[in-house]
Image (tube, rainbow, N blue to C red; front, side, top):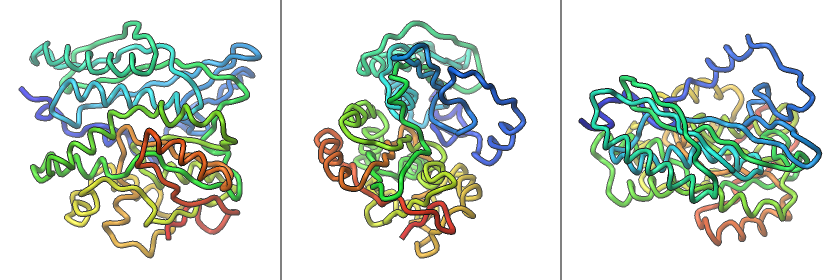
Amino acid sequence: MSLLSNCTSGGCGAKIGPAELAEQLKKLPLFHDPRLVTGFESSDDAAVYRLGADTAIISTVDFFPPMVEAPHLFGQIAAANALSDVYAMGGKAICALNLVCFPQKMDQEILGQILLGGAEKVAEAGAALCGGHSIYDHEPKYGLAVTGLVHPDKVLRNNTCAEGDGLILTKALGVGLIMSAVRAGLAKDEEYAAATASMTRLNKYAAEKLAAYPVNACTDVTGFGLLAHAAEMAGSGHSLTINFDSLPCLPGALGYAADYLATAAGQRNRNHIAASADFSGLSPAQQELLFDPQTSGGLLISLPLGQAEKLLADIQADDPGAAIIGMVTARQEHAVIVL
């Protein structure tokens, strides 16, 4: 029995759509704890809770069904994705707990390989794997609840960009499109290899470079696609102008978009963000790349343009696919403009 044969969706493409989720979150009460630095009201990447003058904890959780057939690889991807929220907040991961849903009829050795892949990424992050929770389910799912540490004054928010900032994206787009092609039996081996290498790559290495620079905002680009995460970064006071030709793109992704291998999650993202973004000058395939759900995607970083080139050079030493993709302007009609 294979992993994918049990799943109707996979990776961050399985997330509940941003519009539907926002509608339900509005019904929840807000919590006014003075030590709560970030909660769910700002749609930030993780919660941050102040413990003292010099210490805050970052708390986040992420899990999903598989998007690859190899269980060990799936475990690595899911763990890298879950750890990413800590890096997006400017923190260091210290410990993690496994979250497991697994079919009772499936070979337990598959579960062991998933857990091993996840454990390897937790170890690479320099964190401790401390246990977890597991249940039987009709579809396999795996992820982590992660705790990190950050100085309360050095928390990176997703919506605090400044006019004149440059925008750095640290990983190429197109993971969802490539994995759709894999399911259809169309993806080339080198395209699959590039996509899985991107998904298993920890954002730790890019994030470690940020402390030396005046970063104003940071988020990771995941299931809601580049445009939705960019709109969150713009907030109500700014607009993000993105140059499409500057976007790093996984090999084959645009071609598969042109072949209509888009995902249901990509369509949900389009429906959610279309009114807030201007992408009218792009082809349908180019547009699809902007809505494509990214599993374990890169960091989107906003910092003064004069420092962006220097930070980019530092990041490219370990992540050569990173690129400056645009800049922050005063608020215009749309939150995001793609040229």
